[in-house]
Length: 92
Image 1 (cartoon, helix red, strand yellow):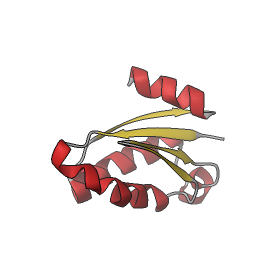
Image 2: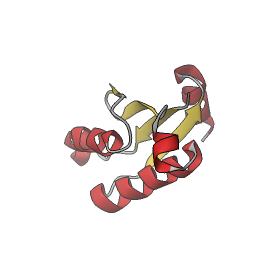
Image 3: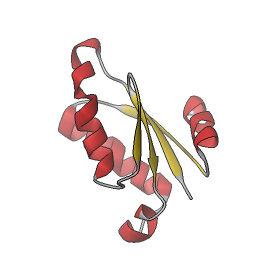
């Protein structure tokens, strides 16, 4: 099981974009938990096999899409559980 912890670097004028960014994560997995005001946890349990990519590659795709489609950069940490993913995010 791989969990991604995503923190979007939202400018104050773009805080309303969080639902759209959560929708971006839902394109990869239906298991997304919002962490207001600017983050989310995403469970990639089946996504790695479905897309044929590991968590690092999926995180790269998510980051590029967030920047290209919404103009928002993000920091992503990955781990086998939510706590380790948050720790990885802190070190990213």
